[in-house]
Amino acid sequence: CPQDAADGTFEDADCLLVKAYNEANEVWLGVFSQAGQELRKPGLTFFDGATRTACGPADTNVGPFYCPGDQRIYFDLGFNRQLEQLGVKGQYALVYIMAHEYGHHLQNSLGIEKRVRRAQQGDRRGANNYSVAMELQADCMAGVWGRLANDMGNVRISPEEFQQASAAAASVGDDRIMEGAGVRVNPEKFTHGSAKQRQYWYTRGYETGDINQCDTF
Image (cartoon, rainbow, N blue to C red):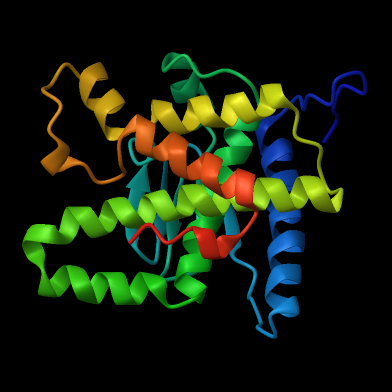
């Protein structure tokens, strides 16, 4: 995995993402250990085009995602091109996406994911609201990881990199996606949260460095 020694830019996205994945493991396993809890590392699979998972088949239209069934992060390597089409630049945007998906693994490990799915089954009309809360919490957890990794010396996150992550969070807001698709923005159809919400919770996590501040419910 060669990288430019001058600015630390990786030539290949998969190398950058493996580095982020390893650092996420180091930070979160340490956090759980200090709390007297055990955390199992999630798996990591790269794909380009299509893949099969315990959650069913997936293709590039899905983008990166976490499957609770096999506790594995799936990362579509073509997603970098999608981010560029959305006007998001900078490698740290991909690191944010990895940290967000790792947040879903934390939710699964802590039992949050199962409780939310049960709540959705009991409240069909409010199912999207629970989904939004799940996604915003994963954003917040991604921010917490960034702060902890920065403070613990694993990585050094520059103001520019923080802005890259913030821009990425906004770019995948439901309102931005609906606007880009040329359809009316309808908050009742949101599943991931608005651009403003996603930026807010990512920033909250980064500024506090405390997973307890990520109660989006």
